[in-house]
Length: 171
Image (cartoon, rainbow, N blue to C red):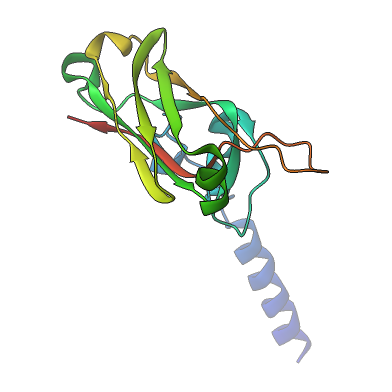
């Protein structure tokens, strides 16, 4: 019995020494390239929200201030063909009832993009074309401005749009 115990102990000791340590290796998710699309509901997108966003609401959207900005990765082919910027947002009924119209404009890097005016409540997309010359690096800062906003009493926040997603799409 003692021989069996010693043999088993030796086997366990030898087996433990032959285990190789786990080594972390880069994966596709860790490529370092900045995504060209942000879903406000995705916590991994938070570092790309540079300024002008309030806290996440209902796990899906954020109020944006009248001036807000994000960093986006340059989509494939954008440096030669340009891209389309897509801002998915909601204009709540109380906002449009009080403001009547809301105009959204953007700047891609240093290039201003054409504004768009909205007159109805609900879901909207702002989709200006971004010229190829805006894409000089692997990432680009997109700044947005909204001409009108609400400041609810006893709140202190300047509420312009309810933002759900922002992306650059290849043409």
